[in-house]
Image (cartoon, rainbow, N blue to C red; front, side):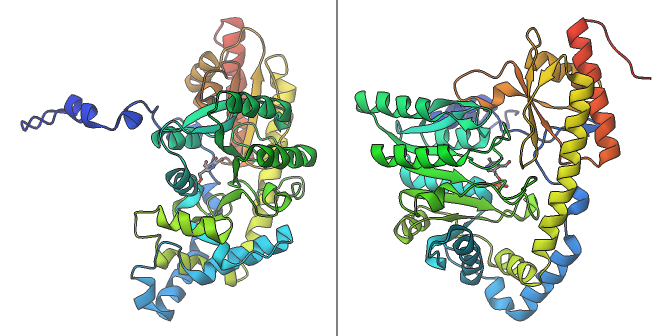
Length: 409
Ligand SMILES: Cc1ncc(COP(=O)(O)O)c(C=O)c1O
């Protein structure tokens, strides 16, 4: 940033930033490389733009005045009711529109929860690794993120119990457990039912709230996941955020939080953006009511299952000496464990030289770790390109392993 002559140089602006913001790492961004296996987003060719255009026109024609004026902090009630009805069927609980607030994606759901509950110094417990956007959000609000180790099945419950017990003894009890139980980002793991039950029991015993991040729920590649934490907890002491980002389009920026109506009121109170876009809320509801959504999600599941299987088979065939991984049951990611001697940074740099962007594991750890891990996205590229990208990635791996540049010409 240049000094415009009025004394507000880049350094001055940096100095004026809130300390919690100044200390944050930058957010992840899209890669300019030819094959981007870095960004966890849907395939662009699947975006249902024509159906959304029809829905937008119908929403505007139906009630332009309401679509194009402030709609309040909770969001459009009929869309909240649609989400509530889905959640009722899934959880067997009585979920109503009073249990739902609409947000700008899960990301704002996490921020809304943090704004309402996390004061400077408050402790948030999260898996190590976990979604970096959540780490940044909690830290921006002054929260302290404490790690709980994960294995192939997700957060380890004995470790969670130990962490909460230690916090209790230091009289700084954790306030919130943040977890993606279905198709975790970055690990792809799905928390088994027994761990879900244990988590709810442990959280309750320690008086700690749960934030269940459902960003990938719906991207089921091996059938539906186990019962949600929300349903196991019977909706008590838990907030569940979700999104249309992964099943429709990230650019919509529409998601939600489901929780007890008392909590929902407090979340709406802790919002300062005049609410989401009534136009988008109405457009999405028109799209959902058109009947196009469920077939669209089923199409995505089939498409991503094929891509997961193709890329997994190639990685096993070509990269076995260099990486190991557990095939995920949903979502967008392979979480690769690198063989001893290979480091994430070296592998990502070598992959980039071969035109492939992958994400080093280190960015997913709040307090260090992940040097032996790389996250690879299988959702974005069509099969033929995905195969080329995986082959190029393996060339990069081999290059790091041998110290000799490889070529697949
Ligand atoms: C675990 C997780 N939560 C939340 C988000 C944010 O998604 P959105 O705000 O687009 O709903 C992401 C995006 O990648 C994610 O991976």
